Image 1: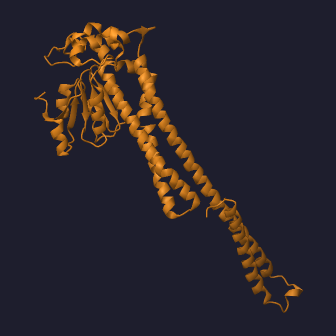
Image 2 (image 1 turned 180 degrees about the horizontal axis):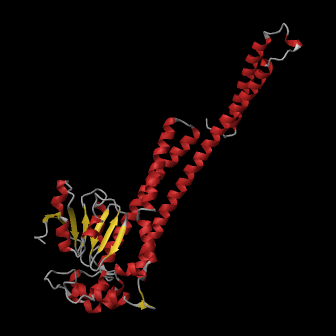
Image 3 (image 1 turned 45 degrees about the vertical axis):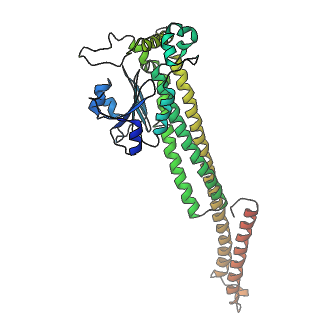
Length: 379
């Protein structure tokens, strides 16, 4: 690993608080992390992926959320989570980013495999022959444990952003219905824009669509079974002498064999992807719940807009009616038609106009007072 990049311990790198665009963290099966400073060529030497797949993880480029299954790796691009997962290690980009640090900590906690009996690693090595009886054959392979952490993190991240938006939006909308002002209108406008962007991230350009595409295609899900495919590899060393991502110990090989035996069954020629399908469906349901919250918020915003429009229409219609009455009276007295009662009483026109204006204003304010009393307009 020393030839691939500059290696720095996690603890010392955390103290520097300096994030470079090429920084990655490598997490192994024991959850131990090492900060690496790698360019794309060093990454392609370490991991069997091509430059096109690596470009998806470039933070300077805008790519939709993607989960790609390759021969020896899973390429993961979910919002701020940009990772490469193999059967033994996880490469995670920008490990010192505030949104990525919790993911690193969760990976370090959950990647180490503890068997059902709670035995230590040494006991697990010595008692490998009895693992099937202890229930280890139902364990997720390493790549699925890492994938589950990533899916859980992105779902929790989007759900947290949604709750923050709800906390800010509902009081702002209630305040706007009670008092229409430029400040409240601008506040709701910004919240609506934030909600639209978040909805787009959750639904169209983010995880939900990617989950849905994977769940609709068993072949794509089968590509994510790296451990299963690894058993078909002829040798851990390729023809050019470069080490492939494959088991390096009998223990790992035994675990992969048990996992693959439990998963490689096919039904009518279709790959068995039941355990991955259940995993994806669980987080797809969570994303659907987040999207439903955003849909409910959008409906609340639309209802508030309709309510405000009704208030404005009531205000304008009331003013129009009052002005129509005023204009009608003024027009009648202003017509150039000779009336006997107008002779010698021209001064009456002035008083009729004044009194009609006062009456129209009184009618308008009476309508507004009644509407406010009935709760049809805000105070």
